[in-house]
Image (cartoon, rainbow, N blue to C red; front, side, top):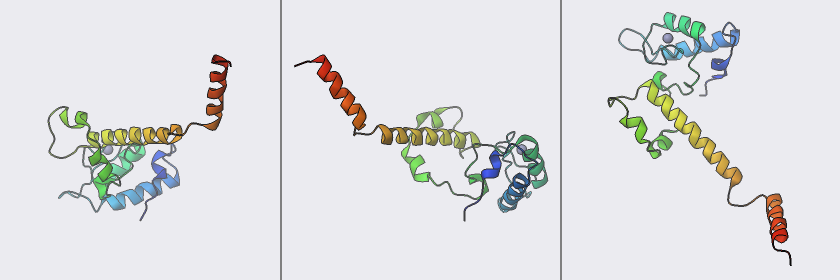
Length: 151
Ligand SMILES: [Zn+2]
């Protein structure tokens, strides 16, 4: 099942689409709570670093907005689609800074997301630049060579 998450980037947080999306999120979040019935709050203030009751989460997200980097709801039961890719990326900075946490915090997921973004961007560039040169560039290159070495 794919969840519509386009609403998290809406600027108008009074829009029906935003509120509907948020309500759907809270329904999901209710299934992933601690013993006090509190899920993690994904607002821009808490960034899943704090648990709040669902009413507070609703108010926080309407008030502050939904954390834009929280695109895969790993704190609310969703599995990260790129788990294998993350394992493949050995980034020492993620694990050396500060006290070694036993469980990855939200900052770490943000950092991983950043790494993933960079990784994806690099890959795209590589595909574009690639091994085969652009034919036009190739011609230009030949032309330049001809000019440089006439005859
Ligand atoms: Zn919050």
